[in-house]
Length: 247
Image (cartoon, rainbow, N blue to C red):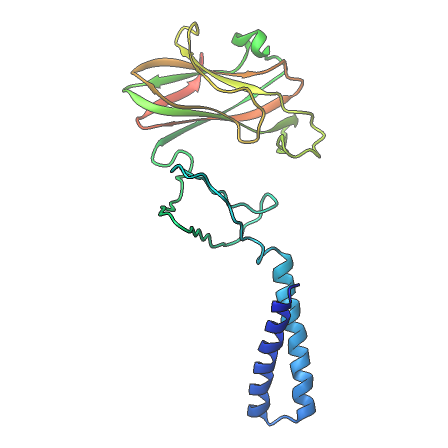
């Protein structure tokens, strides 16, 4: 621990022990003992804070001169941890605005449906054997479609929620997947996501569609060996219906 924190703990303990000694009329020996005890306590507390990275979150970053948007992501080291924080940004010679990015789908209408890839899916070699969903749109709207894994069906009602980034899973690797948007006849692909099995899922972002009926196809990259559960989410600015094709 830096000398600064050692001196700070000594100063705090001396001030507190002096005030207690004067108010309680303690002897010199008792005051000294109290001061040493408080020094140890403050030193321990400051050491705990220092070791948990409280004082290690200052980063100097050299940015290019061209104005641009920079995204800052504040995150705990491990998943599932929550704690308050203060984000401070300082610059030497430029003005900037610091604003929170909206949450996914904020300000839109969210439609969700859950499905699964099963061993009966043929992957990209047989698109029609994969989960297909219908989008019914009544007016022109901009929408974003998100496909994300939520777990593995392990048999019966058991669900293993271990996701691709948790390597200790014994459930096997999640297959990569792709999301395709087609016309109602499943003949013309209007948009397609990247191919990935990342925990964040895959997206078709900010596409504008007119009134009508469309199909959304979720395709695994290969024939799955297990049943992989996923969630399909559609964010839109106008009401629409999402349901399983053929239902």
